[in-house]
Image 1 (spheres, protein in one colour):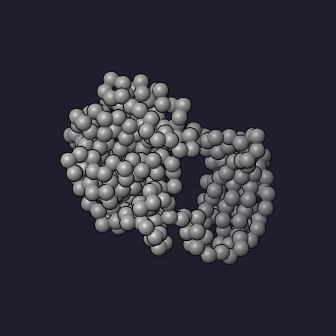
Image 2 (image 1 turned 135 degrees about the vertical axis):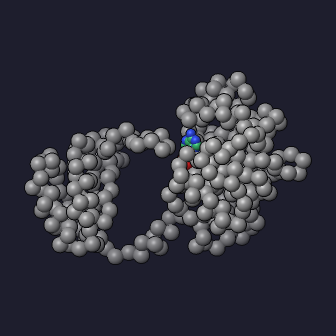
Image 3 (image 1 turned 180 degrees about the vertical axis):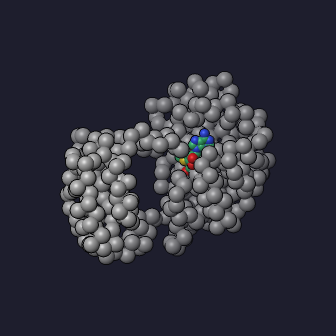
Length: 297
Ligand SMILES: C[S@@+](CC[C@H](N)C(=O)[O-])C[C@H]1O[C@@H](n2cnc3c(N)ncnc32)[C@H](O)[C@@H]1O
């Protein structure tokens, strides 16, 4: 395969990416050309929302082509276009043959939640001592166990089994992504689980992952969540969590637990204030600048 690397200012990203698509590029990726320098810019949107801009001030655009002829033809056509005037061709190079599947897989190792509870990609053996595990491969939905917010929720689940009277009661995973928290609860004995997300692709992925792990749960869009639950887990981000405060609290029954993640250390107080009319949120765990906040109603 051959890689065509270009440098483009922000206003040209859309035209150049569209042109590369039309020229049958197999893939087009856009990165900050100033990454790892003083000029690096953060560019991301809230979950489910588009990023605030198409590209960075200076973006490196890399297009992959199946043959050298296709890459050369694309380059020769692009440089003739008006919109390419302030862009530049950086390189046209052969991509060395690799075992891409093996390379990708090597980046995902089993993740330890507790010494006996692990998240394990399907191509890995279970680690010794893993008496409970979630088998999960990286996919489109968030939640592979590599992010501290997910790990803290799973640690909470592992340490609160069972919640009351020897049973979990109903569990709600709000913003389920891959379904990892719902599956984690199922692996710790929960049997009545609802996993919901605003992203239909996440809902599909959660259902698939639940099947692959041999656990039962209901999956769907947020309307699926009805009534009260003994445990409500929501790993989203501070801003949506604040908006969702009345709704999430209404789903927690008296004596039930609310477990919130996706919150930065400096956001603890604003979350406490947002939830104060219903519960008294406390910081329960922290990792890499993220905190887990919990409350009992
Ligand atoms: C950070 S991911 C968490 C995934 C998984 N629960 C975990 O702990 O790894 C947040 C998920 O919340 C979903 N989400 C964001 N806003 C939401 C909302 N208002 N209602 C329901 N789901 C939402 C996103 O689509 C995304 O799948």
